[in-house]
Image (tube, rainbow, N blue to C red; front, side, top):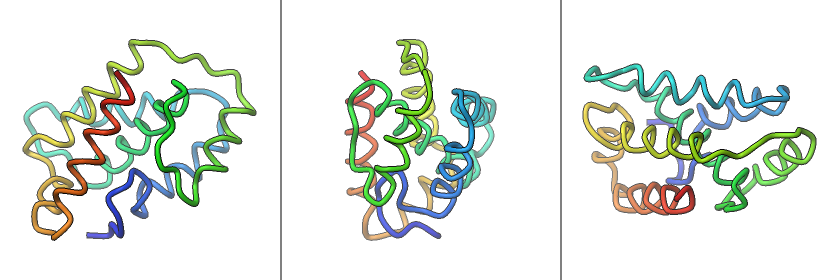
Length: 135
C-alpha cells in the first residue's frame, strides 16, 4: 500500500490527481473521479480509483467552505479554488458522499489495504469526518 497517512492526500495517487486538477479550470476531473467509483457497481473498486475519489471529495468539502487537513496541499487547493469560478451544489456533495461510501464498503481494494494496516481506525475517522463536512 502506498499510503503514508490516513488523510485524503496521504497517498501518491491522490497527490498526483491533485497536481493534474490544479491545471484545469472546472469540476470535470472531480465528476470523473466520482463516476469511476460509482460505475464499479458490485465489482471491486481499485485502489487508485478509490484514492482519487477521496481526494476529489476533500476538494469538494473545501469548495463547500468546510476544509479539512490539506497539509502540504492546502495552498494548491486554495489557489485552485481562488483561481476558478466554481459552484458548490448539494448534488455534488451528495455524489461525493456516495463515492466515499462506495470506497469504504466492500468490495474495495483501498478498504482491504487499510484493514490490513495498524491505522485502519484512523482512516475510518478521516472518512467519517470528510462525510460530515460534506453534509
